[in-house]
Length: 76
Image 1 (cartoon, rainbow, N blue to C red):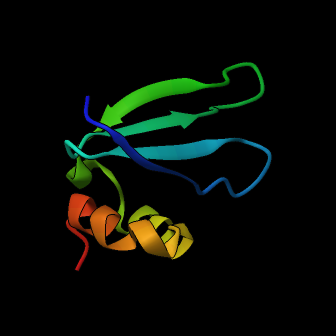
Image 2: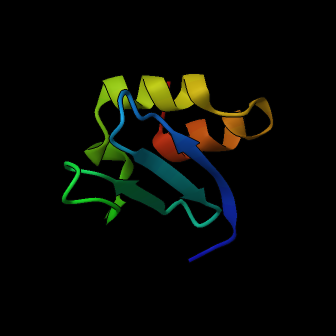
Image 3: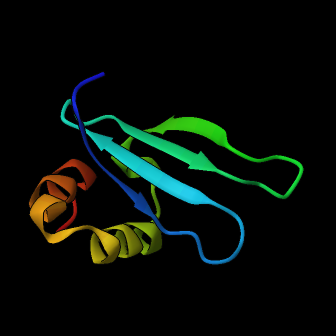
């Protein structure tokens, strides 16, 4: 795993949904399915993230990391 770039939260309600981007282009997602199943972790490839979530991630991304994150996500 490379150096961490940033972590972006796209949680829409009280359930967590955070994506952490790394310089080696790995993406870690930590999310809650429901209150009894919190902080689940999965490692994702860009093609596994929906267009809707990519839009949210880019929109919520701090400006100084936006270019790197868009490159990792293969975002247009």
